[in-house]
Length: 158
Image (cartoon, rainbow, N blue to C red; front, side):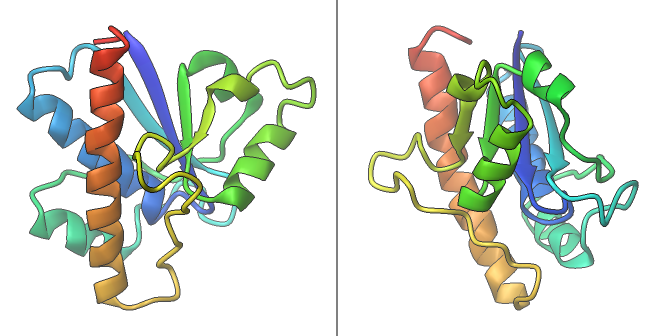
């Protein structure tokens, strides 16, 4: 089983939405038993909270279920997961700081690293934005996850 962790700042906007989109895509393809998916945040402000209301709104509109509560990423996560997909450069730096030795760095990626034309482009944080920005984040994540799932298939991980 492939284990995938999505990481953003507070684990209430981008990473839970990515988790939900990934689960929906895996279910649609009959692959949900082959991939374990979770999400976490680099910060601790929202521990135990549900995703932001606007995240729920976008998820419902697109038939996505969100079930997780906010939690903080840890070194144990870096050991457990095969892929750690972070939303932006700040998340990348914060997650890499958990592993000072750099042992787990090869499995930490920016969310859009698997898109051929979007390398190094972040998934912007919509927290201070509008409903439209949350919808845009859904579109960005949806596309990025299409490419990521194709990567998993091509690398014989699924």
